[in-house]
Structures are given as C-alpha cells and as structure tokens.
Image (cartoon, rainbow, N blue to C red; front, side, top):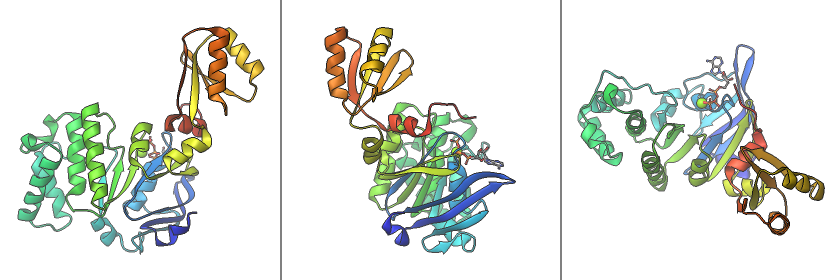
Length: 309
Ligand SMILES: Nc1ncnc2c1ncn2[C@@H]1O[C@H](COP(=O)(O)OP(=O)(O)OP(=O)(O)O)[C@@H](O)[C@H]1O
Ligand SMILES: [Mg+2]
C-alpha cells in the first residue's frame, strides 16, 4: 500500500463482503487521500457498488476494517453519513415529487432547516443548469435530467466526500461534459471524490488515482497515465484485418501481442513505430494507423475481453 495510507481520508484494510457464501469484495486494501478524485473501475460484478455501499455505511462489512475520516464505519455511521454525498447507481428519486421537493425532503435527513434547504436547492438548480425544471415532477424528466437531480441531491448536505456510482451512464455528450465540469469544480473546492465508471475516457480525464477490481479483488492501482504506460506502452498499432498481414506479424514479430477487434488487428508491441513503418513498406496499404495507447486498452488487457454475467 502507498505510504500515505495512514493519513488517508478513507482507508480500507482487508475489507471483505460476503453475500451468504459468495465473496463480492475479497479482502481489499486501499487508501483515498483528502481532496483527490479516486476511481473504482472493474467489469460488471467486480464489487464496486458493494465497496461503495460499505463506505456509505449502508451495508455491513463481513470482515476487515473501514475508516472514514478516522471513524470506524461500524461505529460512527451517523457522523460519516453526514459528511458524505452519494449519487447511487440506481435512480431512487421519488417520481411523484417535484425536483425541488425531492431535494428538500432529502435535506431533512441531515436536519437542514427548510429555508436553508430551499436556498441550497436554488443554488444547485443553477449549478446543474436545471432551473427551469424546479417544479416539474421527477416522472416527467428525461433520464439524463434525473441523473443531474441525483447529483444535486448528493450535494444538498455540502459533503466533504462525494461518492458517484456511474454518474454519467446513459447521458448524452453535452450532459456528460457538464457533469465532468462540475466534478472538476467540486474537486477544486476541496471535495474528495470517489467515482465508478465504465467510461475509460471519463476515468482517465477525472481520476488522480484509481484501482481496477475484478472478482472482488484489486488487480491494479495507480495513476491512469502511469498504468497505461506500464501495461500497454505509448502507442498501439492498428491494421485493417488481412490474413497476409496477420501471418507476417505472427512469424516476424513473435513478441507482439495481437488482438482482433471487429475487423482490425490491434498490435501491442514495445516497438509500435518500427512495426508501423514495416507494415506500410511491405504491404503498401492505407489501413494501418498508429494511435496513443489509452486506458481502455489497459483495462481490457488487465481484465480480459470475456463478457461478465
Ligand atoms: N444483495 C446482494 N445479494 C447477493 N449478491 C449480491 C448482492 N449485491 C451484489 N451481489 C453480487 O456481488 C457481486 C458484486 O456486485 P456489485 O454490485 O458490487 O458489482 P459492480 O462492480 O458494482 O458491478 P456493475 O459494474 O455491474 O455495477 C456481483 O456478483 C453481484 O451479483
Ligand atoms: Mg455497480
């Protein structure tokens, strides 16, 4: 574990969650520092939401320890809940209430007086650019707008820690960029952010550090750029699928790892540039490109391409 784990704002030690005899989170260790944006990545069923629910103090641990701001989640859940804002993966807004009423009702859990919660709701409606939907029933919002209301609700108690479980799933590019912008603003204000996402571009863009989970275990941890360099390198060669090229690559560059994705061959090699030139020389066709390696390459390399149930 990193050295600063001791003064981490959120700290997990051998954190374990079992649902009957199924282990969803398998003795994981991590530390999240104050003020960072920390990503939890992993295929469906990896254990991300389970981990998050334990941080939120809504799911009991099976074993291990979990501390938030020096407080044990099993003992001081009330205080921890007060400092956390949560945007859950599932939409759990009340469809029969208006936007503003959803916010005000939620604020009651934190004993925020109504005049204050109305004032905060007004600011949040502005922040999330949804002022014109203030008095609209949740049931009459689009799903992207509901995600924005969920984010507003997460902010009503002015949390020090913001937990976002797939905040931009199903959003259009405009709404996604708006949320990225807001997340970055909150981070600048000093809010610690824990984020799960299946959008690798989002994780690369927002996260200072991340861990990649699979089957309840942590398989890698670090800064996105460093992880890409470590596991994939700087660049990836992509060639339109062609049997002759495939044979040539296999026989002449046995060190290169080849993946066929749709109708293209992805070539992972320590010498992508040299390979690129050779392919162009030898096969003089236009279907080859050299592109930057990215977090998606890294994620697929570490977690495989097999679909998760
Ligand atoms: N209440 C439950 N009872 C039994 N098993 C559960 C329960 N909740 C989650 N699981 C199982 O625990 C594992 C981890 O689930 P979790 O929701 O934490 O995954 P995730 O990483 O958030 O996945 P996704 O990307 O699909 O949201 C899955 O195999 C899931 O089926
Ligand atoms: Mg989940």
